[in-house]
Length: 285
Length: 249
Image (cartoon, rainbow over all chains, first blue to last red; front, side, top):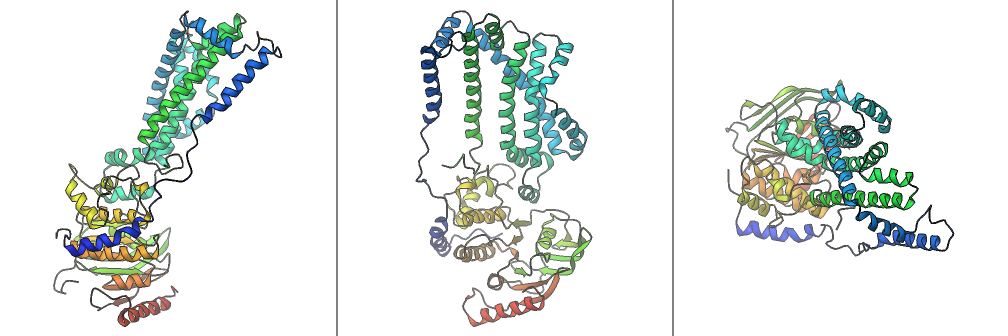
């Protein structure tokens, strides 16, 4: 084979060809500025302030709707009584249950997404099971596994399973045929094809599934702890209701909001790092 | 320049029949190409030109006939043949360099990637992501990727149809330059008669339903060609009339 041309003529031609072609590239800096991040805090801050004033003015009884300042005081008080342990227990349950459900979902989703036979065998059943609202399984899980830790983890795993499974299986099925053809020309075998083309191409859909699965894991953790628990944020909710302490209930709700937002924020950070190659509105600079 | 008639053909293609859902899309196509030769295919949309390229590439094996590379029948994709598609088809999660070297076996040959990027006029852009490229730049990357394995044959399916007219002219020059530098045979489908005549040693005019070669037009014109010369204009007219007879226009 002859080497690439390196004559001055070829270089000249290349240099002469470049500028107009590059001019069609996306503009480096859009004129429209990205809106400031604090904008998202305006609404919650205004809401909390309004709430505080409403209750202080006596329009709503404080024992039903404690003002935000009372809730902060309650949080402070609870902090001295092992609040951190409640948060940790709940978070550990979410992460363990989510890990169990997500790993199983990824394994089955990859199998169904890559094998037509597995899809024909398994997918109709999964679609049917998905149609059942997952909370309907609660009584059955209680019957089978009792009310101890295993039952809670099983319930959380069940909640996380379907969104992840759907993301993986549909993400793999929807990979662009055109990219697969390029890989076929390169002579890639099935394993290399999955590793180098199908999984990266499906990653955005897989990631969406994981994010949805994680938020459902938080939801099912609360459901599990509401039913039977002696520790955790769900326990605080029940405890607050039984003792008529709306401030404890709202404190637990606030903590759930913060933890859910934190875990989803972490997923977003990872998404920005691993999926920055996407040419979408979100990744536009 | 095409080799002398005595050298054995690099690529021999014979498609007796190709069916799509019982409908005959290609019939009795014979094509033989020599090293360094450029053959362009023109014809109406849906006349099976792209299908023919997919057969040569080994992407479509469901046909009656055979593809021979240097006398040996091929069965499926080979590293001697590379395909540049209508769309650049770059892997969006890989950098430009990663896309060019997608076919690499073993460690990445950075020097080779740099040389190829330099050759297609994208020196220094190896670290970019595909989303940061213009359409013309992306197609240049696709050409560099096609050259990476040093193929004997480069197939192109309307590769410049999505870029503006000015960029198209420059990409045509680029294609001529790399085809000569690497001494590879080029088989290219195009809708642009000027392009077909400017690039091709031969232009094959396709008839539709079923697709077959209606008129082969040999262009005994010297290279490099002058787009505005009377000879090139006359050849363009010849091809256009052949397309009329094939009911493509």
